[in-house]
Length: 380
Ligand SMILES: *[C@@H]1O[C@H](CO)[C@@H](O)[C@H](O)[C@H]1NC(C)=O
Ligand SMILES: *[C@@H]1O[C@H](CO)[C@@H](O)[C@H](O)[C@H]1NC(C)=O
Ligand SMILES: *[C@@H]1O[C@H](CO)[C@@H](O)[C@H](O)[C@H]1NC(C)=O
Ligand SMILES: *[C@@H]1O[C@H](CO)[C@@H](O)[C@H](O)[C@H]1NC(C)=O
Image: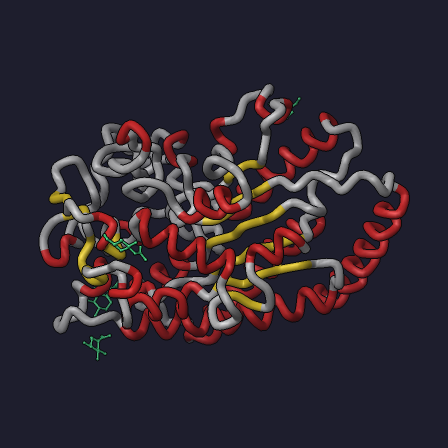
């Protein structure tokens, strides 16, 4: 029933938009801003603003290849995929984190969008809220702040990220005096990994298909919220073969990938593919590009040399087995040939790998991104 009523609502909504478009001056193409939502794969410093968060990267060696070797909160030696996608659209790097904005930010001439992504978050509100998941993977990050046991905020959930976007939309609409601010804008979303990690490592008794259905439903609800707020163009990145992260390989006696996690990631992509088809048939003016992070990454792991990668199993920064028994903390061991590593730390890609991912999303063929790529999405 809930589904049906949404279909009716969204049809009405699409029609309303079509009428609005006709009314707005034909010469107003609408602003093309960039909004980024998701987890640590796209976080450019959100969690730096959560003093008690355990999920952070605002200390060395993170950022060693960033200008002035500055740790920024990115889980990378330099830039991440959100930065490279923004670059391909003409920006210097990703738009800034929502939590870094002040009352004047949206009025700036070069305002280009907002990044809401928060490391550790997922599709489900509970994902990242407990430190349980973190503990599973190795030594938790030692932060200078001792986390009080009470209501500390570890991450910004996707639900909260969308509420933040609603604030931005409201303020922008007021500032831009009725110019269309969302219809042409790009919404990049990279999430899902942390939900799958949490499920897999909790030995949950919930059957796999049932859990995947709950994630699909959660994704659908998040996208509907964004559509209700005027979003129309979605660049979505599914889950990479996360069983091949160094942090997961160390749980396999052979050093191979954790197949159970990879199966979840693959099934998640199929769910997402079906969901996007459904949503775009219900609301015809939605445009989307779905990046198959699974296929893209497997392609590199199986054939790394053409991409200049010589190490696709161990982390560049860390300690112990596969350099994956510790997070990338200041005392961690650091590789020197960072452009030859697929993994920066026990979970996250290097700057080189992120760049490759963004290039593939932007200009790749249908093996990697469907039904169109991110460049076509931007122009659509
Ligand atoms: C949005 O507007 C409110 C009210 O004017 C203001 O307090 C807030 O700082 C603004 N937020 C952003 C991100 O611009
Ligand atoms: C899940 O099962 C594995 C293997 O049986 C065990 O090592 C691990 O401690 C269990 N985890 C939880 C959270 O119960
Ligand atoms: C461990 O890796 C091997 C390949 O080296 C694979 O066949 C096996 O299924 C993996 N084990 C688990 C638990 O995923
Ligand atoms: C690989 O590295 C070599 C030398 O380090 C460089 O000339 C070449 O452009 C690189 N190729 C790619 C695909 O990055």
